[in-house]
Image (cartoon, rainbow, N blue to C red):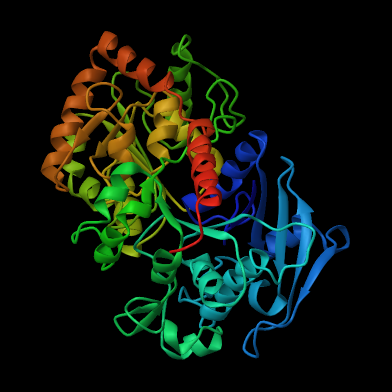
Length: 480
């Protein structure tokens, strides 16, 4: 099988969320299983530095995709893990600093429809009869709205083509643009229907992918069910229900090499399920690093997250007095909504020694929080998959989570963590109190830790499910 994995992010060079991690971790595991996977990604500045132009030969010059698209080229490179990369080189579109989607003022780039329209168009070109390169994919695997129009291009443009699969990492981001974008990205007017790319008067990249793809996956079985409901479907539930036979949920894995408490380069004290006493030393070091009182008689609660309403971090802020009274300590790492950033800064100032916050991101600190915290908090209002709860399980840090999306699929109440259902501060507090009570019972706590640390959380099983889906797509007759 030949698979093109089309993505707008790939860790460690460009990452804003889980997609970057998936793009870095899934293709190498598929290749290890004998599948020929190549990753298409824009040639961002960080990738230019990692793979300089004089070391990345041009394999195709692309200048025939319409008057509105700037000229571009494809360059070939190989990631350190051996995964072949196809780098979409367009200085005008992708040689920009910082976040791939936002300008310096925090607003979407005004030409995002052209930038990611081109990425989608090139993905479709690689999967079409027009591609005369020595390598042609059987399946174009798209991810989120930024490559969501590739299935539309494949179906609407003439000629034979590869099968198209789209994975939804977060349905909330849909790539919405005005009608003018349809002509500028070279799609026919016939696509502007409710059974096409039109979505309440906008062109929706994601809807185009969901409508035209041969198969749809999302990043957990529970999220696949949730997005078919009107409450969670973000306006697309009807379409997803209509395509339920083509929709499945495959839980993400985690990088079990980077996230291994026994060999984590960010930790001073490695540990495993048989040597959990070393985890207490990481806790003491984290407390000292974050200016907390070094106490082993209090549970330390950890948060590593985007500070947003979606993640339920306002529920934690609402419980500041109750958390202090448990008593427990709290350490927060993250950035996001300005109001929440200020709230956690103020909490740290108001309760020094008990609450600490680092607004921003620090990869090493994220690992040290996973290792040093006793309990991890993820009270998300919705969570397509979530990775931190799996990092927490692997690090012997039982999580407290809301029963949604991938959190519901990976955390079992009273077995390896604690689960609550209603997105309220009261429900979170009840679960947190149960967790703290269990923490005070060493035998119960060790059982919870051992269950999480012994689970298979890697990519081998998810990769085998993707491989089976690719095989099914390739084997079946053409047709929507």
